[in-house]
Image 1 (cartoon, rainbow, N blue to C red):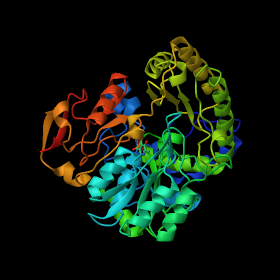
Image 2 (image 1 turned 45 degrees about the vertical axis):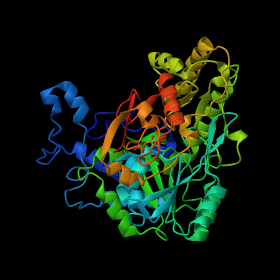
Image 3 (image 1 turned 90 degrees about the horizontal axis):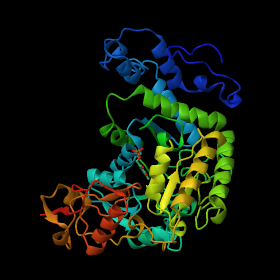
Image 4 (image 1 turned 90 degrees about the vertical axis):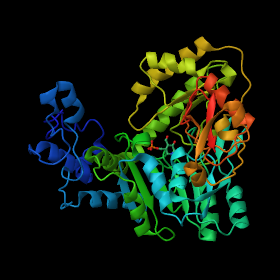
Length: 497
Ligand SMILES: Cc1ncc(COP(=O)(O)O)c(C=O)c1O
C-alpha cells in the first residue's frame, strides 16, 4: 500500500488492485475535488453545521458526519467557480452518448420525476409500463400526466415478468395520436429486459420520446455480453441509479438524455424543481467516480462479475426444484448476466425464512418473498464474496425444502386495473378510510405496492376490487411488506370520498 490519500487517512491506490483504475482520481473531477476539500484543513463558516467537528462532540458522531462535504461551498465554491460539477456531467454525457446529463442526489426517484416533469403539460397522455416504479407514478401525479398503461408480459410457467412488448407500444401509439411520451422500465427487478431497440424504432417513427427507467442497469453497455444501455438502443432519456449496480453512495443517480425530442431547458427546470439546493458532495462524487470506474475498467470488472454470477447460477441450479434464470435462456440482450435470482416454488422452501437465515449469517438480500430470492451482485463482488453467500443460500434452501408449490406470478405483475380518475385528481381528492370489505368498488386514494419490487398494484384513481385486496392480503400474510398503504395491516383502505 502507498502513502495516505489526502484527508482520509486511508491507504493510497495499490496498483495490484486493478491496474486500469490507477488513474481513477484524475478521471473523476468530483472525487479529486472531494479529496482536496477533505485535505484542505479549512475551518468552514458554511453549512453543514457539523463543520467536520462531529468527533469533538462524540467520536461516533464524528465517524458519521466528519467526511461529509457539500457540493456547493465544499467540493466547489458557492459560486461553482471551478466548474467541477459541469465537468463531471459533461463526462457522463460523453460516456453514455447523451447530449444532456445531470448527477442527482435524489436517486432514480428524483430522476423519474424529472423526466415526468419534462414532458408535455397537465392532462397530456403518456404511455407507461404497468411495471413502473412508484416514483414514476408520483411523477405522473406531480406533472398531471394521464397514463395509458402498457401491459407487462409475464411468463406464467415461471412467474417471471418479461418486460413490455414492442407490439403493445405500437398498438397504443397507433390508437392514440395524442400520446406525448413512452415510459418503460428495463431491466426489471428480476433481470429480464425489454427490447428497447425494437421499441425505439417504433417511438422514433412516431417522433415520440422514449424514456427508460434503467435504475437497475447502470452497468449496461460496457461489455459485449450485457445488454446495450437504453440510449445506445435509441431511447431519448434514461435514468440510472448509480447506487444500485455501481459502486456509489446511496441516493446517487445519473440522468441522461438526447435532446432531439426532449427540451434541454425544460429538462434542467424539471431537474432543479425537485432537487435539493444543498446536494451532498459525497453522493455526487460517488456517482462521478462510478462513471469513471466504468470508463476505465468497465469491461474487465463486468467480465469478472459475469463469470462469477454464471458460476453461482450453476451451483444454485443443483438444488432440486430451483429455477435460476440466466441469459442463455433469453434472446440476446433480454436478460442481465449480473442478475442472480432464484425462484423457489419448485423447492418448496419459503424465501422469507431463507432470507432470515441469510441475514443471521451476515448476507442480507436485495429481495425475498415466499417464492423469490435475489442476491444483488455488482462490480464490487468477486468470487470471495459470492461463494460463501451461495453456500449459505444453498444450505438454507435445502434446509427448508418441502413439497413443491404451484408457480403463482406475483400480484405486482398480474393485477387487473380499472382507472376511474387521473392519478393526480384522486391524489388531491378528499378521502376517507373504509374497511377492506367496504373498499370494494371504491376509487383508491393511495398507492399500494408490495416492496420490493415497489411496483404499484393500486394507484390513486383506480377502482379497488376484491381480487386485488385478496392478493395483497395474501402477499402480506406470506411475509411481503406491502408498502405505502396508510394501514399496513390492509384492514382498511383510503378511498376517494
Ligand atoms: C425500477 C425502479 N426505478 C426507480 C427506483 C427508485 O430508485 P432510487 O432508490 O434510486 O430512488 C427503483 C427502486 O428500487 C426501481 O426499482
